Amino acid sequence: MLFVPIGLIVVITAVDQLTPEDMHLGPLLVIAPALTAMFADALLTGLIGLLSEAAEADIGWHFGALFTRNVLFQLLALAVLSALCVAFCVMRERRLRQLAKVRSVAEAAQHGLLWPLPERMGPLQIACRYLAAEDEAQIGGDLYAAARITGGVRIMIGDVRGKGLSAIGEAALLLGAFREAAHRHATLPDLAATLEQSVTRYLADFEPTAEAGERFATALLLELPDEDHIIRMISCGHPPPLLLSPTSILTVPNLHPAPPLGITGAGPDAYIVDVAAFEPGDTLLLYTDGVIEARDADGHFYPLQARAAQWNRANPAALLHRIQRDLLAHTHGRLSDDAALVALHRQLDNNHRHRHHGRVVT
Image 1 (cartoon, rainbow, N blue to C red):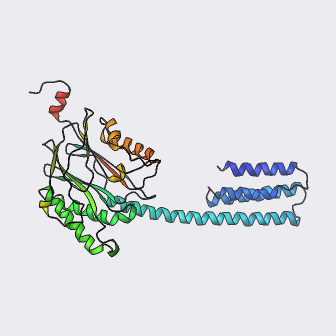
Image 2 (image 1 turned 60 degrees about the vertical axis):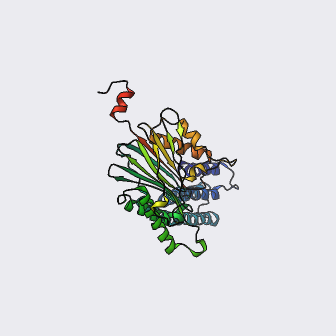
Image 3 (image 1 turned 135 degrees about the horizontal axis):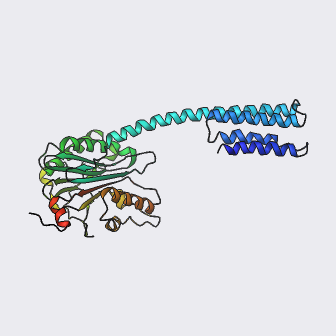
């Protein structure tokens, strides 16, 4: 882009020297430093300003009017404008440095809150995606976490009321409570009750009076044993997962949903554990309502189940990449709510690999 102001200086200078003496194009040289200030730093802007000054002086020398009041005034005006452009660049660069520092702190805080899930945990291959609705935000009110326990893995995906940065407080509470309690409780109902108590206590202390009873969080808790090919699930008002099999069959496990967290203060007896088969080669797709409630220009919801069925053989990372790209195309690049996706793939064990290749196992 630097060739544009330089080219303007050359063209204006050449044309001005070829035109009659009563036609003055030299004042147009102010365009060069003003244009440079839009994309370059203070040093380059100053150099273009000096080059413009030299071109104006050359025009005045060519016509023998360098020391006339008209040319001297034009040189002074050009110098003042160039100085203002340089000052603007200095202030802009200072603001950009401040913004970069603030952004780096915000990114560090957001990464510290929502840790990326490991690619592998036991027999599971894992991938995750987060799409924040607010510009410059990387997380919001949606959340996910995983914990390795004895003989298996526990996963949580959730969605607190609200979106964007204003919902981070509740999300941080729920993530911290899960990471602390996931290893301590033997059963999912006990874990769900502990999370319910944590959210209820938080809301009792910090919920605004005007929003009493309106703050809550949905969550889906899963337990995936290493040896048993099953999933244990508790849904606290959260959308059910999708189970993708290599045989192009897409099923939605039937769940008995409990109320969202932070509403009832219920104990372990209020939660029902649902069990579904999760065979080697299957992929479990977890998501928040920001995915299925995303609308296109005509108001149609995103058809997650139909789209995911097309990519049932993709690995978790490829599956989420395709869904993310398709979701953003559906909404023309703008989400109205935060969206989170987690894909869990149970890898084939030795027996299934041998059967897959047609060999006899002894």
